[in-house]
Image 1 (cartoon, rainbow, N blue to C red):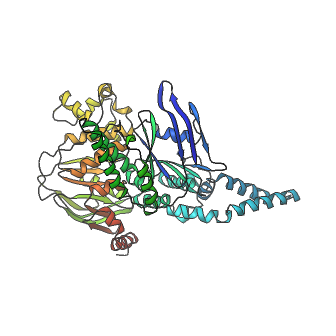
Image 2 (cartoon, rainbow, N blue to C red):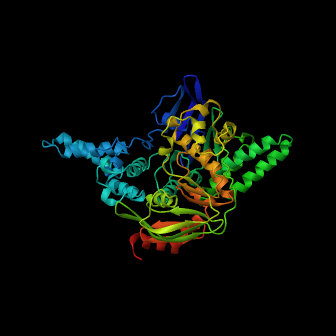
Image 3 (tube, rainbow, N blue to C red):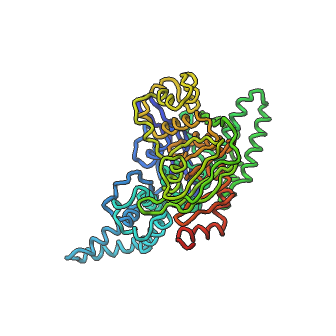
Length: 540
């Protein structure tokens, strides 16, 4: 349990939040949301005692242990993967270290024997004999192969380190668990594993994430940082988002009677209660929703970008024909003999266990690199707009935002360009900011502005939610769902895939799987899963 009393956090004259009084209790997962800069990560740092608050206190239950997902990928470079995970339970690790040091003493004394006996008793009480097998299970579940478990951390890739650090945070089932962006650099299958793990986790979890499906799958509550206040709501992210949108609509209908508004909100809550997904949490969530104070629901102060793609013409029946495409990288096959036709109204998600496969495929069909074999042909009516995974090359200049966008526009009228940048929440003095100093999220919003200028009828998107906040992801998602053209994309965002794609193409080193179905059906279809395993193992 975590108790927050009268908490204020202020940097200079800037107040992030004040008068925060919350209690986070076992058996619940709290998703912390807020606009960029609202103070989500700061809240976790204060709770974990990495940052002192301006005022107030944070306390844990007596004897409780707090575990935090480390963001430093180099701290443990000199340790093995296994030791890094075991160190996540500091009390157990200290016992193990002292016990082993005593056993290694050449002059082992009677006093040492008594101390070792005490340590062995504590070790047994904490089920220390299962520690390495428990750590190994966590590592395997997170995609770290067994042959790497005793490798040094410095020899792992960045993505592998992220998974080890996550295993470290989870190890030993801490009483209180703080996770800041835990799904970053995880593939979709590993995210699903983590969702299932946390759904069954019986202690207290606080999580910051931009992955809406993840938040919906694991969270029983939403902690919203808005208006300089921190408010706690029963329900997951989707419930918070839909209720805040309902409140906004009601706010805009000032002539609506109070009683009508209340009935509309109560009906919304009733419908949402009936759709709670996780069976284990259904009863408790319904009870929490029943207790929800209707008056607490209010419109959010968040600003959502206006992402609007307007095709200059409708795509014809001939969109894209791909024949026999193959590509290898450093001698490793990414995909082989890819054959398919894109039909009108197709919105296709491309997936692979090797994310380089999608990036290579998109680069090929955008004529940025050559395939090893095969051809592709776009239809005569097709115009494309491409959002690449890496965009650094686009920002190596001294241009300000207006000058930068004008490079890609036929109409360079300043008012016209300001309209596109304004939709992506750039205005006033921000328009004069040099593009070389933009954050990752700001660069993505610039790239989306560039795409909107093209009026394309086919959008090609390589992991488009990278660096975007929840508001931008939601706006992007809503736009693509209703887009009157074709979308070819890859993503690590489950909700994004499920709500946009009507077709799944999986690229493997030994062939492709091409299914006209929703993503949730694809990942649960036993025949598809059997085919996937055979293709990745080269059994076909």
